[in-house]
Image 1: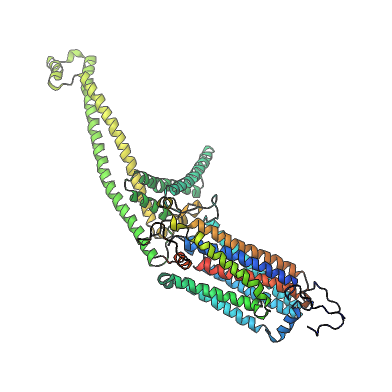
Image 2 (image 1 turned 180 degrees about the horizontal axis):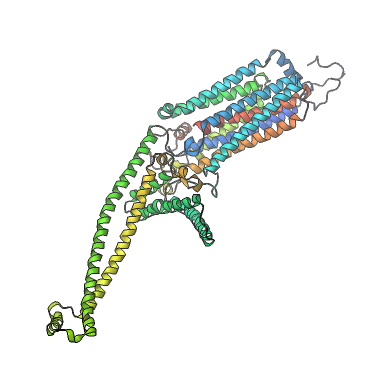
Length: 446
Length: 162
């Protein structure tokens, strides 16, 4: 470097640091910490994702992730990387206006990226996918906690709607049709889906049957069939189980109906008996009250003989009547129980019909009744949500910081004296792009 | 250029002028960036196609992941070399990037035994309350397995299902 500028007498060739501008050096040091930061995050994600037991990590479609949206965002970031490089080139050639144009374009592209990210986040939130519990509707396993969770969520809605309805009725008004429909749906789901499953899970002796009942409920609400052969098979199996259950219930229902008819016939018989007994115990009173004189001697003899021949004096007839009435009461109870059971089965059959609907088997009740915000089972879903929001969230914060930097840069006249600022901003922005290059396949395509 | 402030990044010895001369014969023009841009787009399309290929996902997910990571690394290299000008920088670039890369790789290697293989030694009772269903293991792999080496660990983590 002896040919350095000649106007100073003493030349000190002192190189205190790396041969780059201080700003650039600081930025590179910062970027090297950023490399470690994102390596930690991405590494944790990879390890958690592949450390999760096989088959449990949600596929992109299970969690409403659309690959093409991610691909679009990748494209946007690549474009912005090019525009900021072009801004730097223009600035180096002292074309401040052109440089500003490219910077504005970069800023816009960064904003588009954030906008798309916001849309994607909103899609998740709409479907109850949040990183933490109070809002998250993700359950990891179809177990009793899940059933209770669904019950609680539905009952809350039902109760508030019912209270609302009560209030309106006091004023002589009624619920708007939409809400009234909701109330019907809520009651239907509570009895025929949740309660049915609850009883199955409590009553079935076979542990497997209990598990299957809860599994069926989870699939009815949020099936998330995987693409490909495996998913198709699982779906067919589920559909077959619905048909099976329908057949089983129809059979049980037929048996129950015979039981019910028998009980009703029994009751009628008892009723007739009671009536007969009433006649038996009453006529004497009547006759004695009305005109005892009219009774022929023969009739009196017959009445008097009855206890001896048939053992039913008015007193024992009353006894018999109470007994029959008690039996009738028991029969009434049984009929009521059978009736309720019949209603329950019919309700379930109705629901099964709904579940067998093509759209419901495909997308589930959670999709059909989106506004009811049903809790859903996504294995490893909470871990997925945590890592997804952490990774994309930190990346989005970096994008935001980049946008702020762009605004600050845009305040200058971007001629060649400012090109080092542009260079540093560009380095940062490229790093943000770099992170996304890895995040996109890892989150959307793996 | 009358006086040079020592803190001025454009002062001599701080690489600015070296870069300026670079520009003349090193990486002139917009054409190079356009080529890199097209390459990045093509590579993105490739990883998108690979990721959406159901046959690949079913038959050899490992190959699919490896391809996507290779594509990502290629894209990252393009961005680093051309957009971040690393191709034309002096040797100082190694001082900053190599230690950082080494430390991040160490970090990953540490995570694998700690987090990635966390379910390997779960007791049966632990599985009952685990959020994840128990993976079907080939018979004979139950119980506390003898410590595997790292390569093995990495493999078990990335083992495809089915």
